[in-house]
Length: 87
Image (cartoon, rainbow, N blue to C red; front, side, top):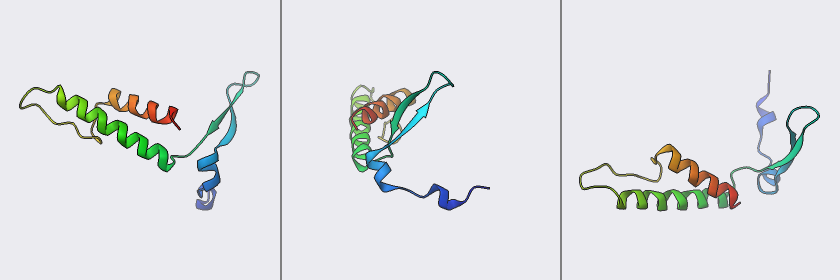
């Protein structure tokens, strides 16, 4: 059984990242993984806020209201991709 201490947060790996090997045997490659840094979270929030504003501008009178934390999944996916690419 896994111990909770195994999952403790290593703050240096959150910001600097950790290189890991992925892919099938004989055809692997390395990627650098990072945690959700404050810069990523701030960027994601700003992108979601702007997306919600854009969606609300195009709404007809009486239609629903979009909030940054309640975007359509495809719009939220775009925001997450942009935030990840920027960090």
